[in-house]
Structure formats: structure tokens, C-alpha cells
Length: 348
Ligand SMILES: NC(=O)c1ccc[n+]([C@@H]2O[C@H](COP(=O)([O-])OP(=O)(O)OC[C@H]3O[C@@H](n4cnc5c(N)ncnc54)[C@H](O)[C@@H]3O)[C@@H](O)[C@H]2O)c1
Image (cartoon, rainbow, N blue to C red; front, side, top):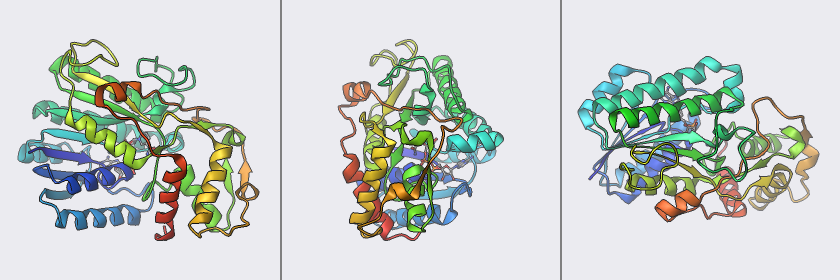
């Protein structure tokens, strides 16, 4: 019976993960930690927490939400001392490539300083497995596609990417020095119900519904490997079931003697953004949100490439499949249909 800490539990991925774990009902206790910052509407984070409360009421798992900051060392110390976590799933971070260009200190504080605080607590309290969110952005513009975990990742093109790279290196070093079993998961453009309003699929939908114009960068020629939220959660749950031990599986980075692994979690099926726009339009029309004659391209301005963006993301998921017998399956049409259905019932 595991004791689990999920940081960023009011966030998109964190809230879906906590919901799934509560439904499964096999853990002894789950503690969710989130500072509920206002990077995007706090009402959305609160509504995710309400949904979690309902699931917790029907679950045998002891659940507690703590509003607090991962940079608060005293708070972390108290939580780790009280709960003796077996597994920590660290998802709290300042997301957003473009935001990291305009708010670099926020990115550094949460993603580097905050990560370091979580790592330190894991070390002091001998946590059994630290799983942490990295990102496809670490591959930058120079890695060959599809992106493999052993590609060089030393040319990040945004501060956000550099912060995630930094986390991977810190975690690797702690694994090597102190034997902390750690797994970094490189997520690829995660989307779905109750998603993040700063991401293109959510933002464009809101803009079209309000009669506003969406802005599509690199004139729609970027390719993105969109990954449905349930697939990401399934990947995390599989990784939670089997932490790395020294020499257990082929290493994705560094030596086999270090209990540290990296995995891509992506669909492995990148789509050109111009095609994505058409699919999103159709999903929103099928959900009755947009009129049948709505032409998304007539409401979308094509813009030049943005600083910090990369032209392509494309995951090689063979390592995840090899070690955990799983790779994302949900088609983009199906995932967008579920997102649009959710959107129809939520006025965010
Ligand atoms: N969604 C994606 O497409 C994607 C892709 C790659 C990587 N990631 C990473 O996955 C993780 C989860 O992403 P998400 O999409 O759920 O983002 P999210 O912004 O919805 O969730 C992150 C949560 O962390 C919280 N948080 C931020 N800083 C904090 C701090 N200092 N202390 C406590 N809580 C803090 C926020 O309030 C938020 O609720 C992040 O680390 C993100 O960088 C996400």
C-alpha cells in the first residue's frame, strides 16, 4: 500500500493522475500539493480539485490536498516527515515556453529551485521512486526525428527547455550520488478535457467561440506530436509500478549502474498544425460549439515563427513500449472529440 505525493495536483496532468489513482483505490494515501498560481484561471484548477474531492469521497484511499509551494522547504520537510512517501510524482512547474521568455525568474524559481527542493526532500527521506515531468522541448531544433531519449539535448531554444534539461541533470546527479531511483518523463503536447488554456488547441477553441482571431505560428507548418491525457496518465501509472534499480533495464542516459531513466511519452504520430486546425474545427462543430459552415482558417491569422518554438516534435516511444509494454493509442480525432465534448459543458 503506497504513500504517494503528487506535486502540481491541481494542474492538468496532476489532477487527471490523482483522479485515476483514487479510482484505482490501491494506494494507502495520496497527498496533492499545488500553489494554485494564476498563470491561467484559478477557477479551472479549483474545479479540477472539486472533481477530485468527489472521487476521493468514494475512494478507499486517504486523500489530502495541501495548498503550498514546492519552494517552501519547511512545508516539504513537514509533509515528507509526516507521510514517509514511497513515490513522489513531481509535476508542479511553470509551464509555457513563451511565458519563460517573458517571465524567466518565475520559470527558474519553480522549475529549478523548486525541483531542487523536491529532490532534497526525496534524498533526506529516502523516497522509493521519484518520477518527474520533463518535456519534449529538451530536444530543441537539432535532435534527429523521431526523438530518441539518447539524443543530444544540449541545445535548448527556450528557458523552459533549459530548466527541464537542468532538472534531468540534477536528478541524474542525485541518482548517481545518493542512489535515488528517479525516472524523468518527457511529455509531448498533452491535450484533453480540463486541459491547459494556454495551449493552442484550448486557446484557439476559446478564441473561435468568442468570435476572435487565433494566431498560428510558423504559418501552420510546425508539426506537433499531440498526446491524449489518458495515455499520459496510463504511462505515468505504468512507470509508478516499476521504478529503476541499478542495472535493471537498458539506460536511457548515463550508466546502467545508476537508477535513473528517461522516457518519452508521446503519441509518435506528429501532425502538421494546418491539418490539426481542420481536425479541431470538425470536433468543435460535431460537439455543436461551432456552426456547420464555420471556416477555422478564415478566423486564423498565419504568423511567422516565434522565438522559443521548435518546428517539429516527434516521439520515439520504443523505450516505453519495451520497458512498460505500453505506448499511447488514442487517435487525435477521438481525443479532440472528447475535449470538445468537455468544452461544451464548461464555460472556461
Ligand atoms: N501539458 C503538456 O503538454 C506538457 C508537456 C511537457 C511537459 N509538461 C510538464 O508536465 C507537468 C505538468 O504540466 P501541466 O500541463 O499539468 O501543467 P499545469 O500548469 O496545468 O500544472 C502545473 C501545476 O503546478 C502548479 N505549480 C506551479 N508552480 C508551483 C510551485 N512553485 N509550487 C507548487 N505548485 C506549483 C500550478 O499551480 C499548476 O496547477 C509540468 O512539469 C510541465 O512542465 C507538460
